[in-house]
Length: 138
Image 1 (cartoon, rainbow, N blue to C red):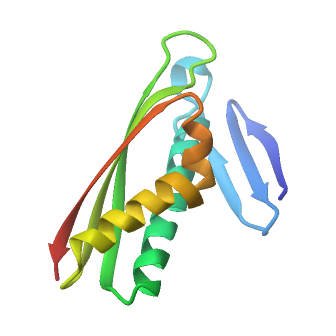
Image 2: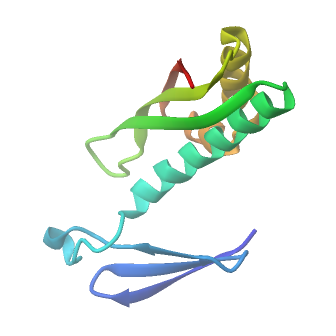
Protein backbone atom coordinates (compact mmCIF):
# COMPACT_ATOMS: atom_id res chain seq x y z
CA UNK A 1 0.00 0.00 0.00
CA UNK A 2 1.26 3.46 -0.86
CA UNK A 3 0.24 7.05 -0.36
CA UNK A 4 1.93 10.33 -1.26
CA UNK A 5 1.04 13.46 0.70
CA UNK A 6 1.97 16.83 -0.80
CA UNK A 7 1.94 20.17 0.92
CA UNK A 8 -0.39 22.41 -1.06
CA UNK A 9 -0.39 25.83 0.57
CA UNK A 10 -0.79 27.28 4.05
CA UNK A 11 -1.38 24.15 6.10
CA UNK A 12 -3.32 22.20 3.48
CA UNK A 13 -2.15 18.89 2.07
CA UNK A 14 -3.33 16.62 -0.73
CA UNK A 15 -2.91 12.87 -0.37
CA UNK A 16 -2.83 10.65 -3.44
CA UNK A 17 -3.50 7.05 -2.58
CA UNK A 18 -1.95 4.07 -4.28
CA UNK A 19 -5.32 3.37 -5.92
CA UNK A 20 -5.21 6.82 -7.55
CA UNK A 21 -7.67 8.70 -5.34
CA UNK A 22 -7.18 12.06 -3.66
CA UNK A 23 -7.91 13.25 -0.12
CA UNK A 24 -7.61 16.89 0.89
CA UNK A 25 -6.64 17.81 4.45
CA UNK A 26 -6.30 21.21 6.10
CA UNK A 27 -5.57 22.71 9.47
CA UNK A 28 -7.54 25.19 11.56
CA UNK A 29 -6.95 28.92 11.01
CA UNK A 30 -5.15 29.28 14.35
CA UNK A 31 -2.51 26.85 13.03
CA UNK A 32 -2.15 28.48 9.60
CA UNK A 33 -4.85 26.48 7.82
CA UNK A 34 -7.92 27.79 6.02
CA UNK A 35 -10.39 25.19 7.33
CA UNK A 36 -11.09 23.94 3.79
CA UNK A 37 -10.88 20.20 4.45
CA UNK A 38 -10.85 17.68 7.29
CA UNK A 39 -7.97 17.58 9.73
CA UNK A 40 -5.54 14.68 9.28
CA UNK A 41 -6.73 12.99 12.50
CA UNK A 42 -10.34 13.32 11.32
CA UNK A 43 -9.37 11.35 8.22
CA UNK A 44 -7.89 8.64 10.48
CA UNK A 45 -11.21 8.45 12.34
CA UNK A 46 -13.22 8.49 9.09
CA UNK A 47 -11.07 5.74 7.60
CA UNK A 48 -11.60 3.64 10.69
CA UNK A 49 -15.36 4.10 10.41
CA UNK A 50 -15.23 3.11 6.75
CA UNK A 51 -13.14 0.05 7.54
CA UNK A 52 -15.48 -1.29 10.21
CA UNK A 53 -18.70 -0.41 8.32
CA UNK A 54 -17.31 -2.25 5.27
CA UNK A 55 -16.78 -5.34 7.44
CA UNK A 56 -20.23 -5.20 9.05
CA UNK A 57 -22.03 -4.84 5.71
CA UNK A 58 -20.02 -7.65 4.11
CA UNK A 59 -20.52 -10.03 7.06
CA UNK A 60 -24.28 -9.38 7.14
CA UNK A 61 -24.59 -9.79 3.37
CA UNK A 62 -22.68 -13.06 3.46
CA UNK A 63 -24.99 -14.15 6.27
CA UNK A 64 -27.93 -13.50 3.93
CA UNK A 65 -29.33 -10.75 6.11
CA UNK A 66 -31.60 -8.26 4.32
CA UNK A 67 -29.44 -5.21 5.07
CA UNK A 68 -30.35 -1.97 3.29
CA UNK A 69 -28.24 0.57 5.19
CA UNK A 70 -25.42 0.89 7.65
CA UNK A 71 -23.90 3.90 9.35
CA UNK A 72 -21.47 4.19 12.21
CA UNK A 73 -20.99 7.27 14.34
CA UNK A 74 -17.56 7.47 15.95
CA UNK A 75 -17.02 9.63 19.00
CA UNK A 76 -13.39 10.01 20.01
CA UNK A 77 -11.32 11.58 22.76
CA UNK A 78 -7.66 12.46 22.39
CA UNK A 79 -4.79 12.87 24.82
CA UNK A 80 -4.30 16.40 26.14
CA UNK A 81 -0.54 16.40 25.46
CA UNK A 82 1.59 15.47 22.48
CA UNK A 83 1.38 13.04 20.90
CA UNK A 84 -2.37 13.60 21.00
CA UNK A 85 -3.31 10.00 20.28
CA UNK A 86 -6.85 8.76 20.50
CA UNK A 87 -7.49 7.55 24.04
CA UNK A 88 -11.15 6.56 23.76
CA UNK A 89 -13.34 5.80 20.73
CA UNK A 90 -16.98 4.76 20.79
CA UNK A 91 -18.60 3.22 17.69
CA UNK A 92 -22.40 3.41 17.39
CA UNK A 93 -23.75 1.37 14.47
CA UNK A 94 -27.19 1.94 12.96
CA UNK A 95 -28.03 -1.03 10.76
CA UNK A 96 -31.11 -0.84 8.55
CA UNK A 97 -32.92 -3.70 6.92
CA UNK A 98 -35.80 -6.12 7.02
CA UNK A 99 -36.07 -8.74 9.71
CA UNK A 100 -32.42 -8.40 10.68
CA UNK A 101 -31.46 -10.84 13.40
CA UNK A 102 -30.01 -9.04 16.44
CA UNK A 103 -27.56 -11.90 17.00
CA UNK A 104 -26.29 -11.53 13.42
CA UNK A 105 -25.72 -7.78 13.84
CA UNK A 106 -23.98 -8.33 17.17
CA UNK A 107 -21.78 -11.02 15.64
CA UNK A 108 -20.87 -8.79 12.67
CA UNK A 109 -19.88 -5.88 14.93
CA UNK A 110 -17.80 -8.18 17.15
CA UNK A 111 -16.07 -9.89 14.23
CA UNK A 112 -15.12 -6.54 12.77
CA UNK A 113 -13.85 -5.28 16.13
CA UNK A 114 -11.94 -8.39 17.10
CA UNK A 115 -10.76 -9.91 13.82
CA UNK A 116 -11.19 -7.94 10.60
CA UNK A 117 -10.97 -4.15 11.01
CA UNK A 118 -7.25 -3.52 10.98
CA UNK A 119 -7.77 0.22 11.54
CA UNK A 120 -9.79 -0.12 14.75
CA UNK A 121 -7.61 -2.97 16.02
CA UNK A 122 -4.54 -0.77 15.45
CA UNK A 123 -6.15 2.21 17.22
CA UNK A 124 -7.08 -0.13 20.06
CA UNK A 125 -3.39 -0.16 20.99
CA UNK A 126 -3.75 3.37 22.41
CA UNK A 127 -7.50 3.85 22.78
CA UNK A 128 -10.22 2.19 24.80
CA UNK A 129 -12.71 1.12 22.15
CA UNK A 130 -16.39 0.46 22.80
CA UNK A 131 -19.25 -0.48 20.48
CA UNK A 132 -23.00 -0.54 20.48
CA UNK A 133 -25.58 -0.91 17.76
CA UNK A 134 -29.23 -0.57 16.89
CA UNK A 135 -31.43 -2.00 14.20
CA UNK A 136 -33.87 0.11 12.20
CA UNK A 137 -36.55 -1.91 10.42
CA UNK A 138 -36.90 -0.71 6.81
